[in-house]
Image (cartoon, rainbow, N blue to C red):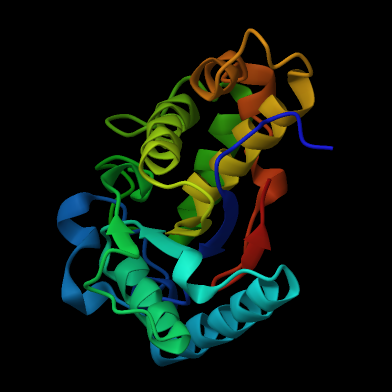
Length: 227
């Protein structure tokens, strides 16, 4: 039984395989992330279509009308492209009110010392996260930094939508971190009378919890239901 009471139901999907994934590059800054040449690779478009079909089956299984779907996505080209593919499969107008870009769903910025380098460097970053998730790479975001802005993203979605099935289209690290704080809040708070979502999410943004975010990893194009 869920302890966290939300106005909406949530699913997450990591963007499909992107051109940076194909090239083995870390692309995490807003400047680079929004470049059109860093959208989905052909395999990623296929993955996004598969994710959309899986999401459609989830909607049918839960008797949710497509009109009640909202697609909230990161502004990076690879996530926008993924959201566009999903919207197309579901026959949802991408420029309509059912699709919303949310800045706080953007990729984790790993800092200038990692930007555009080999994705093999992720292992170094995640090792640092396990030691201290409150300390980020030089010039980049810590796990705590990302958790704080994802809490804001949740507040935006909860304030703007009610009774909807929300598909959150984002990136590997942000979606790992989002799952970490939501599930920790769900497990921690049993008495809802004195807690709201913001305070519940803030309470679990501590090192022992945040350092475990890798256990919620998603493959490219993977769909997962949340609370």
